[in-house]
Image (cartoon, rainbow, N blue to C red; front, top):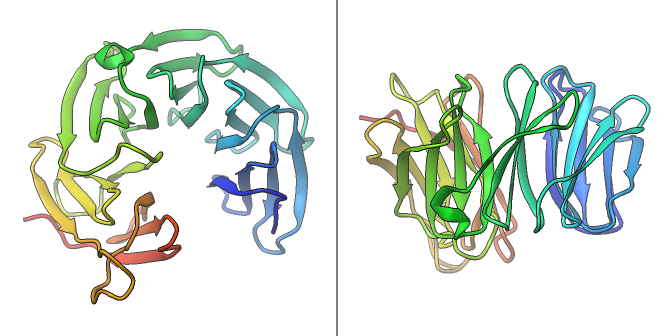
Length: 266
Protein backbone atom coordinates (compact mmCIF):
# COMPACT_ATOMS: atom_id res chain seq x y z
CA UNK A 1 0.00 0.00 0.00
CA UNK A 2 2.11 2.87 -1.31
CA UNK A 3 1.84 6.43 -2.59
CA UNK A 4 4.44 8.36 -4.54
CA UNK A 5 4.72 10.89 -1.71
CA UNK A 6 4.31 11.16 2.04
CA UNK A 7 0.99 10.13 3.61
CA UNK A 8 -0.66 12.81 5.75
CA UNK A 9 -3.85 11.12 6.92
CA UNK A 10 -5.59 7.76 7.02
CA UNK A 11 -9.24 6.96 7.70
CA UNK A 12 -11.33 3.81 8.11
CA UNK A 13 -14.74 3.57 6.50
CA UNK A 14 -17.57 2.78 8.96
CA UNK A 15 -17.75 -0.84 7.83
CA UNK A 16 -14.03 -1.34 8.48
CA UNK A 17 -13.25 -2.94 5.12
CA UNK A 18 -11.76 0.11 3.37
CA UNK A 19 -8.96 2.50 4.24
CA UNK A 20 -8.54 5.94 2.70
CA UNK A 21 -5.19 7.73 2.56
CA UNK A 22 -4.31 11.36 1.79
CA UNK A 23 -0.91 12.05 0.26
CA UNK A 24 1.65 14.61 -0.85
CA UNK A 25 1.44 13.04 -4.34
CA UNK A 26 -1.76 15.12 -4.85
CA UNK A 27 -4.05 12.10 -4.62
CA UNK A 28 -6.19 10.24 -2.15
CA UNK A 29 -6.58 6.51 -2.49
CA UNK A 30 -9.05 3.94 -1.24
CA UNK A 31 -7.71 0.51 -0.34
CA UNK A 32 -9.13 -2.90 0.44
CA UNK A 33 -8.05 -3.32 4.06
CA UNK A 34 -7.74 -7.11 3.78
CA UNK A 35 -5.84 -7.48 0.53
CA UNK A 36 -4.05 -4.11 0.40
CA UNK A 37 -5.27 -3.60 -3.17
CA UNK A 38 -5.83 -0.03 -4.31
CA UNK A 39 -9.47 0.14 -5.36
CA UNK A 40 -9.54 3.68 -6.67
CA UNK A 41 -7.22 6.69 -6.97
CA UNK A 42 -8.86 10.07 -6.43
CA UNK A 43 -7.02 12.66 -8.52
CA UNK A 44 -7.93 16.31 -8.94
CA UNK A 45 -6.36 18.31 -6.13
CA UNK A 46 -3.55 20.60 -7.28
CA UNK A 47 -1.50 20.50 -4.08
CA UNK A 48 -0.87 18.13 -1.17
CA UNK A 49 -3.93 16.20 0.04
CA UNK A 50 -3.70 16.68 3.80
CA UNK A 51 -6.83 15.15 5.37
CA UNK A 52 -9.64 12.74 4.57
CA UNK A 53 -12.85 11.57 6.21
CA UNK A 54 -15.62 9.10 5.35
CA UNK A 55 -19.22 10.09 5.96
CA UNK A 56 -21.08 7.85 8.47
CA UNK A 57 -22.66 5.72 5.74
CA UNK A 58 -19.30 5.22 4.05
CA UNK A 59 -20.29 5.99 0.47
CA UNK A 60 -18.71 9.48 0.37
CA UNK A 61 -15.12 10.49 1.14
CA UNK A 62 -14.22 14.12 1.83
CA UNK A 63 -10.66 15.31 1.22
CA UNK A 64 -8.97 18.58 2.19
CA UNK A 65 -5.88 19.96 0.53
CA UNK A 66 -3.13 22.55 0.55
CA UNK A 67 -4.88 23.87 -2.59
CA UNK A 68 -7.41 25.31 -0.08
CA UNK A 69 -10.31 23.22 -1.40
CA UNK A 70 -12.49 20.39 -0.15
CA UNK A 71 -13.66 17.68 -2.51
CA UNK A 72 -16.43 15.12 -2.03
CA UNK A 73 -15.90 11.80 -3.82
CA UNK A 74 -18.14 8.86 -4.63
CA UNK A 75 -16.29 5.96 -2.99
CA UNK A 76 -17.45 3.29 -5.40
CA UNK A 77 -16.83 5.08 -8.69
CA UNK A 78 -14.10 7.51 -7.66
CA UNK A 79 -16.03 10.38 -9.26
CA UNK A 80 -15.65 13.87 -7.76
CA UNK A 81 -19.13 14.91 -6.69
CA UNK A 82 -18.34 18.44 -5.61
CA UNK A 83 -15.43 20.83 -5.13
CA UNK A 84 -15.62 23.64 -2.56
CA UNK A 85 -13.32 26.69 -2.43
CA UNK A 86 -13.23 26.20 1.30
CA UNK A 87 -10.52 28.33 2.91
CA UNK A 88 -7.82 30.91 2.18
CA UNK A 89 -5.05 28.64 3.50
CA UNK A 90 -4.45 24.86 3.56
CA UNK A 91 -7.30 22.71 4.89
CA UNK A 92 -5.84 20.94 7.91
CA UNK A 93 -8.67 18.78 9.28
CA UNK A 94 -12.31 17.71 8.72
CA UNK A 95 -15.02 15.75 10.51
CA UNK A 96 -18.63 14.75 9.76
CA UNK A 97 -21.50 15.03 12.21
CA UNK A 98 -22.82 11.68 13.44
CA UNK A 99 -25.66 11.81 10.89
CA UNK A 100 -23.42 12.96 8.03
CA UNK A 101 -25.47 16.07 7.19
CA UNK A 102 -22.73 18.55 8.11
CA UNK A 103 -18.97 18.58 7.55
CA UNK A 104 -16.71 20.75 9.71
CA UNK A 105 -13.39 21.91 8.27
CA UNK A 106 -10.55 23.95 9.75
CA UNK A 107 -7.54 25.62 8.23
CA UNK A 108 -4.32 27.50 8.77
CA UNK A 109 -6.45 30.62 8.12
CA UNK A 110 -7.75 30.22 11.69
CA UNK A 111 -11.34 29.52 10.67
CA UNK A 112 -13.77 26.65 11.18
CA UNK A 113 -16.43 26.31 8.50
CA UNK A 114 -19.56 24.15 8.57
CA UNK A 115 -20.81 22.75 5.26
CA UNK A 116 -24.06 21.12 4.20
CA UNK A 117 -22.91 17.89 2.64
CA UNK A 118 -25.79 17.45 0.20
CA UNK A 119 -25.30 20.79 -1.58
CA UNK A 120 -21.96 22.21 -0.39
CA UNK A 121 -23.47 25.38 1.08
CA UNK A 122 -21.50 27.02 3.88
CA UNK A 123 -23.78 27.14 6.92
CA UNK A 124 -21.49 29.03 9.25
CA UNK A 125 -17.97 30.41 9.61
CA UNK A 126 -16.45 30.53 13.08
CA UNK A 127 -13.46 32.73 13.88
CA UNK A 128 -12.63 31.79 17.46
CA UNK A 129 -10.13 34.26 18.95
CA UNK A 130 -10.69 36.30 15.77
CA UNK A 131 -8.86 33.60 13.78
CA UNK A 132 -5.56 34.70 15.31
CA UNK A 133 -3.94 31.23 15.36
CA UNK A 134 -3.74 28.57 12.64
CA UNK A 135 -6.03 25.62 13.39
CA UNK A 136 -4.63 22.11 13.15
CA UNK A 137 -7.56 19.86 14.06
CA UNK A 138 -11.33 19.77 14.46
CA UNK A 139 -13.70 16.98 15.52
CA UNK A 140 -17.25 16.67 16.83
CA UNK A 141 -18.06 15.48 20.32
CA UNK A 142 -19.81 12.09 20.59
CA UNK A 143 -23.18 13.79 21.27
CA UNK A 144 -22.73 16.17 18.33
CA UNK A 145 -23.36 19.28 20.42
CA UNK A 146 -19.77 20.52 20.49
CA UNK A 147 -16.66 20.73 18.35
CA UNK A 148 -13.13 20.32 19.65
CA UNK A 149 -10.61 22.49 17.84
CA UNK A 150 -6.84 22.54 18.23
CA UNK A 151 -4.73 25.56 17.41
CA UNK A 152 -1.03 26.22 17.01
CA UNK A 153 -1.25 28.38 20.15
CA UNK A 154 -0.95 25.25 22.33
CA UNK A 155 -4.65 25.41 23.08
CA UNK A 156 -7.71 23.17 22.72
CA UNK A 157 -11.17 24.70 22.73
CA UNK A 158 -14.58 23.09 23.11
CA UNK A 159 -16.98 25.10 20.96
CA UNK A 160 -20.78 24.98 21.04
CA UNK A 161 -21.97 23.76 17.65
CA UNK A 162 -25.05 26.00 17.54
CA UNK A 163 -23.82 29.24 19.11
CA UNK A 164 -20.17 29.11 18.05
CA UNK A 165 -19.12 30.17 21.56
CA UNK A 166 -16.20 28.63 23.45
CA UNK A 167 -17.45 26.52 26.35
CA UNK A 168 -14.11 25.19 27.67
CA UNK A 169 -10.40 25.73 27.06
CA UNK A 170 -7.69 23.13 27.73
CA UNK A 171 -3.97 23.90 27.89
CA UNK A 172 -0.69 22.62 29.29
CA UNK A 173 0.58 20.76 26.24
CA UNK A 174 2.95 22.17 23.59
CA UNK A 175 1.61 22.61 20.05
CA UNK A 176 3.00 25.50 18.01
CA UNK A 177 4.66 23.86 15.00
CA UNK A 178 2.87 20.71 13.82
CA UNK A 179 -0.71 19.72 13.05
CA UNK A 180 -1.40 17.56 16.09
CA UNK A 181 -4.66 15.70 16.62
CA UNK A 182 -6.91 15.52 19.67
CA UNK A 183 -9.74 13.15 20.49
CA UNK A 184 -12.56 12.42 22.90
CA UNK A 185 -12.03 9.40 25.15
CA UNK A 186 -15.29 8.01 26.53
CA UNK A 187 -13.92 4.80 28.05
CA UNK A 188 -12.02 6.23 31.03
CA UNK A 189 -14.72 5.65 33.63
CA UNK A 190 -17.82 7.75 34.34
CA UNK A 191 -16.43 11.07 33.04
CA UNK A 192 -15.30 11.58 29.44
CA UNK A 193 -11.83 12.93 28.74
CA UNK A 194 -10.04 14.80 26.00
CA UNK A 195 -6.65 13.47 24.91
CA UNK A 196 -3.97 15.27 22.90
CA UNK A 197 -0.34 14.79 22.06
CA UNK A 198 2.39 17.33 22.72
CA UNK A 199 5.50 18.39 20.86
CA UNK A 200 7.65 17.34 23.84
CA UNK A 201 6.56 13.71 23.30
CA UNK A 202 4.02 13.63 26.13
CA UNK A 203 0.30 12.84 26.01
CA UNK A 204 -2.24 14.76 28.07
CA UNK A 205 -5.72 13.76 29.31
CA UNK A 206 -8.16 16.39 30.57
CA UNK A 207 -11.53 15.89 32.24
CA UNK A 208 -14.01 17.39 29.77
CA UNK A 209 -16.13 19.21 32.34
CA UNK A 210 -13.63 20.31 34.99
CA UNK A 211 -10.77 20.94 32.52
CA UNK A 212 -8.49 19.29 35.10
CA UNK A 213 -5.44 17.44 33.80
CA UNK A 214 -6.17 13.93 35.04
CA UNK A 215 -3.25 12.07 33.48
CA UNK A 216 -0.02 12.79 31.63
CA UNK A 217 2.12 10.22 29.86
CA UNK A 218 5.66 11.68 29.80
CA UNK A 219 7.81 11.86 26.73
CA UNK A 220 11.54 11.27 26.42
CA UNK A 221 14.33 13.60 25.30
CA UNK A 222 15.87 10.90 23.10
CA UNK A 223 15.40 7.27 22.07
CA UNK A 224 18.25 6.29 24.41
CA UNK A 225 16.48 7.66 27.49
CA UNK A 226 14.67 4.94 29.50
CA UNK A 227 10.91 4.89 29.39
CA UNK A 228 7.94 4.11 27.18
CA UNK A 229 7.12 7.62 25.94
CA UNK A 230 7.65 9.14 22.53
CA UNK A 231 10.93 10.97 21.87
CA UNK A 232 9.46 13.44 19.36
CA UNK A 233 6.23 15.34 18.79
CA UNK A 234 3.06 13.23 19.15
CA UNK A 235 1.07 14.05 16.01
CA UNK A 236 -1.69 11.43 16.05
CA UNK A 237 -3.91 10.01 18.77
CA UNK A 238 -6.96 7.76 18.62
CA UNK A 239 -9.16 6.18 21.28
CA UNK A 240 -10.63 2.70 20.96
CA UNK A 241 -14.46 2.91 20.85
CA UNK A 242 -15.06 0.36 23.60
CA UNK A 243 -11.80 -0.60 25.35
CA UNK A 244 -9.47 1.27 27.72
CA UNK A 245 -6.93 1.67 24.93
CA UNK A 246 -5.42 4.72 23.26
CA UNK A 247 -3.07 4.68 20.25
CA UNK A 248 -0.50 7.42 19.56
CA UNK A 249 2.05 8.08 16.83
CA UNK A 250 5.26 10.10 16.93
CA UNK A 251 7.03 12.33 14.44
CA UNK A 252 10.54 11.71 13.09
CA UNK A 253 12.90 10.57 14.64
CA UNK A 254 10.50 8.72 16.95
CA UNK A 255 8.53 7.10 14.08
CA UNK A 256 6.60 4.76 16.40
CA UNK A 257 3.00 3.86 17.08
CA UNK A 258 2.31 3.08 20.74
CA UNK A 259 -0.73 1.39 22.25
CA UNK A 260 -1.51 2.50 25.81
CA UNK A 261 -3.69 0.78 28.38
CA UNK A 262 -5.33 3.90 29.77
CA UNK A 263 -5.97 4.36 33.47
CA UNK A 264 -9.40 5.41 34.62
CA UNK A 265 -9.55 8.97 35.93
CA UNK A 266 -9.75 9.34 39.70
